[in-house]
Length: 131
Image 1 (cartoon, rainbow, N blue to C red):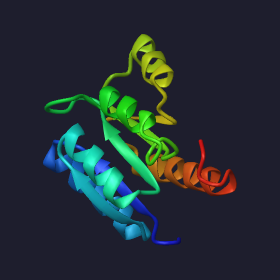
Image 2 (image 1 turned 90 degrees about the horizontal axis):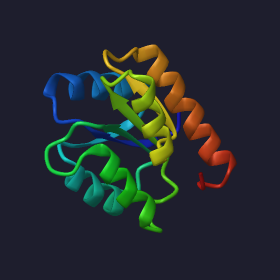
Image 3 (image 1 turned 180 degrees about the horizontal axis):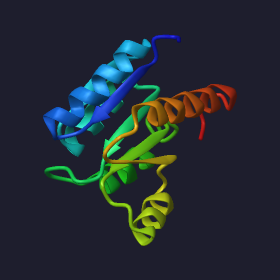
Image 4 (image 1 turned 180 degrees about the vertical axis):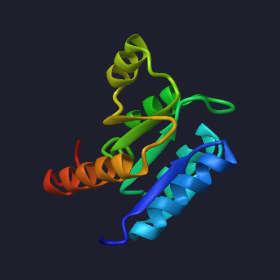
């Protein structure tokens, strides 16, 4: 573990705590945002190694927040995992087409999420930080 910084974007306090606790006990540093707008500001300011993005957020949703991250040269290469309760195939395809690097379904499998996080971080390092 390299103490990588992960931005958690989740408006539900219980879900946010689960993600934060799982990441921190594994050795990751975390930042938290409750809205898409907050996420954009924190991503620009802190340059996290990865973002966990809820889809249903107050204000702009996770898909729009991702679109804005990808449009900004400072944040376009950050891997982003969608965290969603939407499991329908059409929605999964929509999220992948939007540019999410991976999907994690609620209720979150902590072990599965941690594997996805590690794989994406390792791929990001291997590719020099570009997706």
